Length: 296
Ligand SMILES: Cc1ncc(COP(=O)(O)O)c(C=O)c1O
Image (cartoon, rainbow, N blue to C red; front, side, top):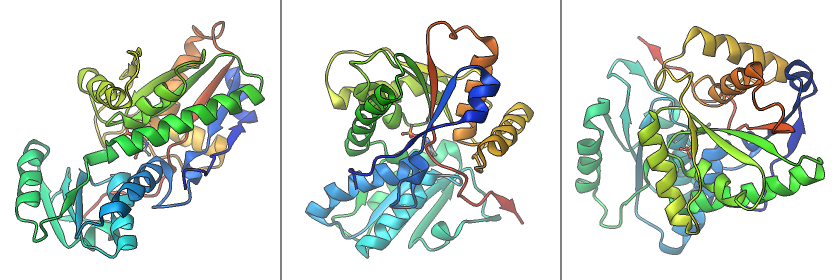
């Protein structure tokens, strides 16, 4: 499904209110594996896994993880069991359906993730069990986003945009790295907006994924300005998410793309880059889909 080209749409309302062309790259419309950027990365991995079909797969993520949702879809399509390590949940948490239907589910604290992953892998009944890196942090995913970067460059040319500031929610870093790589030979600039990491760890993830893609060193812009922590939503984030959701007519997820709109709101209100860039692009990596945490 790498041939799926997500539309680049003008938001007339946001362009009017922010005083500069605002374009939305609709990755949320990706049609496979639950959609969004994790759906695209999982589709890329699917192509790889088809060559050596494993007996089962497993992965790791938080309760709000879109990656776990997409990976569960992949296991279903391959008709193999799916195992998961879930952090930031408690045994009293009501889990979303894709986690309730896991074959093996290990719930742990954020501090115990590495040992839980080791347990999951070492006790897997299959010798060909495949552990998919958390967040879809793998080369096929980064390559898929390099392709998206190249296609975005063509779309921007067709809009007559010379120099865009591209904002993308960034977690493990493969999505941002792919976009940086795909847009490397253009004047456009990519800013990753943290969804879960402080700057040093965030930059490390992007740099690692860039190294898989080879080529020269790229500069990495990783924005942590409004960052409050994974699953922690400040009043400002809630307000901006609600405001931009109603402007766009789409339910934005405060955990992911809502943070990119918060960065956009802050950057545009400062006005500092108004002379340098002729458009803002927000990569809409997904809309709100994961059921929110409901404590019993
Ligand atoms: C909707 C959404 N956007 C962006 C990201 C970040 O992607 P990546 O892990 O490739 O940095 C995630 C996951 O963390 C996500 O679920």
